[in-house]
Amino acid sequence: MQYGKVMRLQSVPAPYFDLEKTLSSGQVFHWTRHGRGFVGAMAENAVYLEQVGESIRVTAGQAAQAAHYFALDHPLPDILETFPADPVIQMAIQFSRGLRIIRQPQWECLATFLTSPLKQVQHIRAISLAIRNRFGRRLQRDEIEVFSYPRPEQVSEIPLRELLECKMGFRAANLLATAKIVASGEINLEALRDLSTEDARAALCELPGVGEKIANCVLLFAYDRLDAVPVDVWIARVLNEAYFAGRLKVSLRELKAFAADYFGSYAGYAQQYLFHHWRLTYRKRR
Figure 1 (cartoon, rainbow, N blue to C red):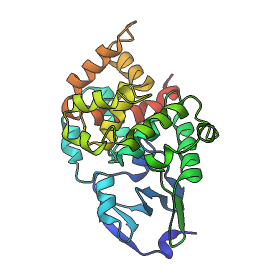
Figure 2 (figure 1 turned 135 degrees about the horizontal axis):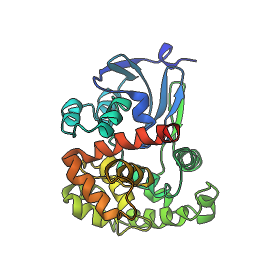
Figure 3 (figure 1 turned 60 degrees about the vertical axis):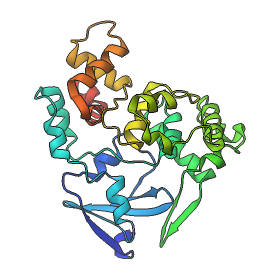
């Protein structure tokens, strides 16, 4: 079945955008391919969307939400022009052309990345879908049926043994503990928008299971802090091999400082392009 034939869709201009690359780039993990497009949830709304040239067609009534979610207002050509002319980042730009940083709901983003340590993208996706399908709210729009990510108040009441059944291992305890803190109001995720990037990062790092890498993912993907650089195994590898000539014992601090200085105020975009390119091509180039 192709949803577009039976569902009323709206067209949204989307220049310099690639829907498939954006959804498969390790930012978000619950969208599912169907027919010519994808189905998923934007907060509490079931959404179908597909790309047609330089526009996307989206479930009627969700056009403005989709434009915000996919950051179609980011001046992507101008952002890419700020990067150095070196072949490593330029090759990543060519490979990842049209990839945009998604603006995700804060709790959903934080919770999902709490389940990510030491997991590959497909495993994070499996956990995210398991949590949604078991504990989330059923969302239906015409023949679309998807599930929302459960709110912190809901997660805080889930017995640990049930979270463990979603195959997240030690990550379950961190998710549960953080959900209790957020649900209690001890931390106000929306209020972090008013803090500097450094202060917001420090506040996030106070949460169980949140280190700098997860904090930077949340800042980049939920708070529009485009200078935030999550340094995981892939980014450490590309920075070390491409910019430090494979030098032994380059510290994480040194890699972070280099990325922030070298790529500037849009270093988060550079990170995502490098991550997407190297994750999908590294073994082929060895």
